[in-house]
Length: 278
Image (cartoon, rainbow, N blue to C red; front, side):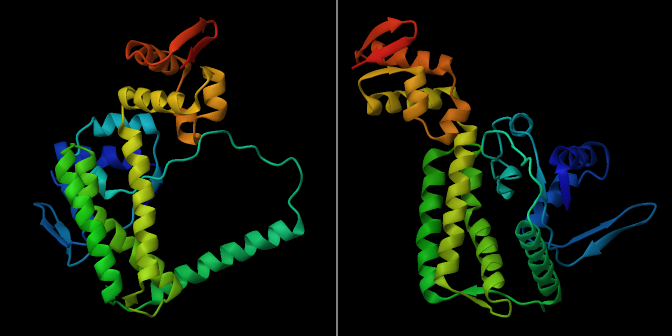
C-alpha cells in the first residue's frame, strides 16, 4: 500500500475501528506479523486469507504523527513502522537541462528497479534463515534491546525496542534477497547491515520523541564542549549537528545558558547577543 499522506490510511482504519467492523486497527497490527484473517458479515462474506505480505509506504508530517501517537504506543501500532526522517532544508532544482549521461543513468536505475521487482514477484515461497555466526550476533543485539526496553519503561520507546527483532529480520531478509535472490541463508554481513540501519532509524525516532527538556540538556553539553565565549550564532555554526540545527532555536539556547549559570557553570558575558563564557 502506497500513500502520499499516510494520515488518510490511519484515519480510515481508526474510523473502521470505531464505526465499522471494529477491526481496522487490529488488522493493521496483524499484517505486520504476516498473519491471516477471516471475517463474516451479515450481508456478505468478509473474506479470509491464511497469510499476508503487505508493506505500507508513505509520508506524514512530523507534527501530525506526534498528534496521532500522543506519547502512548502501548499497543505497538506505531512501533511497527520504520520512520525515516527527511533532512532539513529546501529542494533546489537545477536550472540547466539534464545531460545525456544523467538521462541515461536515470533510465538505467529505473530499469534496474523494474528487474528486481519482476524477480521478487517470480520467486517461489521460501523461509530465509540466519547462519550460526549471524544468529549469535543477532541474539546479542536483540537481548541488549530488550534489556534497555525493560529498563526505560517508556510508553513509546519501549514498544519500538521490542520490535527490533522483527524489524531487523525483515530488513535483513530483504537485503539478502537483493544480493542472493535464490538463497535462503542470510550471511552475517547482511544481518549486521540490517541491525545498523534499524539502530540508526531507532535513534532518529527516539530523538523525534524527545521533548524540549532533552533538547536543552543536549545544548548545554554542546556549549560546554565548544568552550570560550559562546553565543547562539557561534554554537549553531560550529557546535550543532544537522538534527540540532533543525530543532534548536535561540530561545532554547537562552534556556541552556540560564541553566548553566544557575549550576554555577560559567558566566554571562553580555546580553546582546546573549553570550556565555566558562
